[in-house]
Length: 115
Image (cartoon, rainbow, N blue to C red; front, side, top):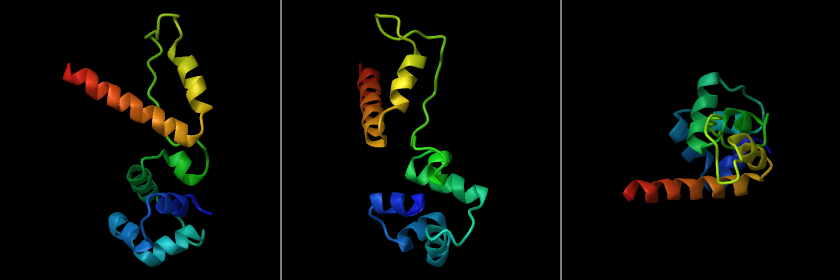
C-alpha cells in the first residue's frame, strides 16, 4: 500500500476529498496510490504538510513521521541528559508513540504560555 493511501485512509477521507485539498484530479490520486503516476516536488511538499509528516516518510524513505528540531547547546533535565539522548529514544518509538509525545509537548507548551 502506498503511503498516500495509508495516510488518506488514516484521515478517513476519500480520494475525491484529498484531490480537492491538493487541487489535483481524483484520477491522479488513484494513479499515485497505485504507483502509476510520478509526484512533483511541489506535490510531495503539499502532501507532507497536509498529512503532517516529513517528505521522507511520505515517500517511504523513512519510518519516522515527524521532524524534531535540536539545539545541542541546551542541556535537558537534572541528570544532564542532552538532546541527542532524547532524539535517540524518540527515533526508536513507533509513529503513534511519537505523535502522542509531540501532542503532550504541545499541550505543555500551551499550559506554560498561559502562566
